[in-house]
Image (cartoon, rainbow, N blue to C red; front, side, top):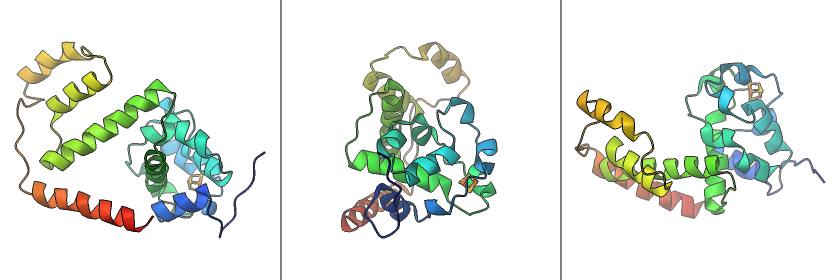
Length: 190
Ligand code: SF4
């Protein structure tokens, strides 16, 4: 049975709103975000539908949808939202809640996206920036697809598109501190 959630209850909607700092209930389904979504062709549900699913407490469906994991946080959608909903923050909130709850999706595609996120964030934490070569290698190892896109590597290396090494950013220490502070705030908000 589908139950419409309402404010004041500790629901999925409330959790998403709290985490994102937005109010999903403000969405009136105009669909403006759908037409601006750069990766909408690859998504199973456009943001408008994700908003509705959150209102309907369809938590697992939201977590399973590749849309919430595909979101590039480019903010093209929220720029056009007449209700000023921070749609990327909402998508991120759904992802974070899924990770916090240790949700393991069945979909291989979503699993891989989740791994990609983890590796990317780890690179930023370590070096203060992305280290593409290491990221590619770790991703291929963790997804057990060792030779994925390997044919592109020589060309990219020769053209200098992928540097062999990485220099940590000067601000790497400060970024690490930011991660630690975010972790602390996360713990306190639980
Ligand atoms: S643009 Fe905003 S109000 Fe319109 S459907 Fe998308 S999220 Fe809802």
